Image: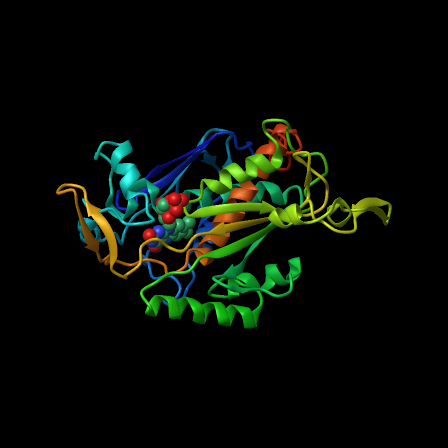
Length: 366
Ligand SMILES: Cc1cc2nc3c(=O)[nH]c(=O)nc-3n(C[C@H](O)[C@H](O)[C@H](O)COP(=O)(O)O)c2cc1C
């Protein structure tokens, strides 16, 4: 069970992870490494708040190992400028959650910076993902994301897992193809100069997932992945393998023929994206996630004054990312890793108490 807490301009963003097996070596540094990947080190790409986002683990760790008790971790907010948001209190931003949240919570919601419905809540996703990725490494499973498209600029040739692993986080836009990365960066700068924003697509691969993971009918692997991915703010589409294109093809084009490769059953193509019937097929899981353009743009927009009930215009100040996709790459990886971990625990592929030795050299039970 996972829950998160905190608001964009509140005290902190935090998470509680209940159900992590005991005996996993875990430190604040493990969370920090993942959090550091969330913010591209380019002022052109990441315009929003400049914060160090330092992870603190409050519970669930003893002698540098997880204890099996709930893990609570948080990041304190440091760089909130709430004054930037006074203008949106009664004049909701088009494309953001201000208006429906105000109606749902009867104006009691913390609207500053989007409150709980801010992109900053993805800090919680990334802290959970850091723990999930460590657990997956025990099963040799890798989760690799990258920016596949920004606006109408997309990578032409699918990068190999090795290329994604080696180059994604060296690119400010998190695209492993150097030429495309430059074009994407320029497109983002152009959009910002036009006081506008761009959407994008993040693709994610999960490698070495064993065949047979997933709990159809109602906890199918693709359904659970899609659910968590759709909980990331600004996600507007999720597709596996050939995705929406499969609807345009015939069966003979879409089916992935089985062959034997070094005694293993594999498929020639992977249009299914590694999942059939809600169960992992043993092929790489391939999922693409579409992000809408950042709603908060500097351009003048139409809105309604909720007090006077009159139409008016709104000019948003403050710092906003001109494109969400680059920051979302480790968030998508984290969501995928979290769901996979959950299913591997349910299938007892990851045990409730991990083997090996603890910090005192004591052998742990498996
Ligand atoms: C990593 C990340 C960063 C985001 N940064 C911003 C931002 O700087 N400004 C903004 O208006 N929206 C930003 N968003 C998007 C909003 O949080 C989101 O659009 C809003 O909550 C409305 O939800 P919806 O788009 O899912 O309907 C970000 C989203 C993510 C995932």
